[in-house]
Image 1 (tube, rainbow, N blue to C red):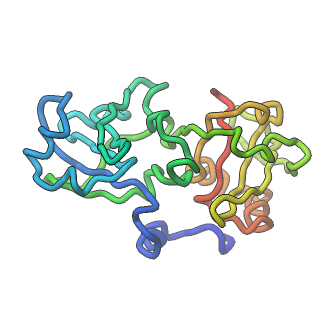
Image 2 (tube, rainbow, N blue to C red; image 1 turned 90 degrees about the vertical axis):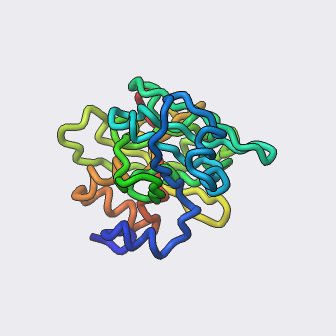
Length: 232
């Protein structure tokens, strides 16, 4: 496996700032539609510790998709609780958050998030749609990603995948960090807004030599890869 793919994700997290990723705060509270005041009374100090984009998992109700999950949205110094739906199309980070504006693409990846438990269990049970988060991105802020001449392409052996075997990719920079941006259809780049983060699709391709060569050629680590979601 090439040097840009991290084989020990836990070690990777410990060697990087945890505030780069969301924290899951595990609680047990009733009623299901609690307020932040209710939460602070039950767990003094919790609200002070949560940050913009963090996840509160109510273990009393979690375990099916994102049921029992809410997110913290902070605006003008005020923290608000945003509910996350658990229907298949809803169980993703709130569309109020946008990557690059608010966070890096891997901010809510299950393998990178830190768990802060206020209960006996230390195991988060919720999961995103199809295991990886679908996120919003303001494509108008990145005009170079809309130019098909900026893309290279390679063929992938995606056995069992109901998607195009050709992947188009380009590299762009944001805040002195390089990112690998991919799509399976160049027709999607004109007005995209919904993207997926790297870890889940990358895992399915880890044994795909052409894909590994893309990562090695571009010198991009897997948590900095995103692609347009072709299903939205």
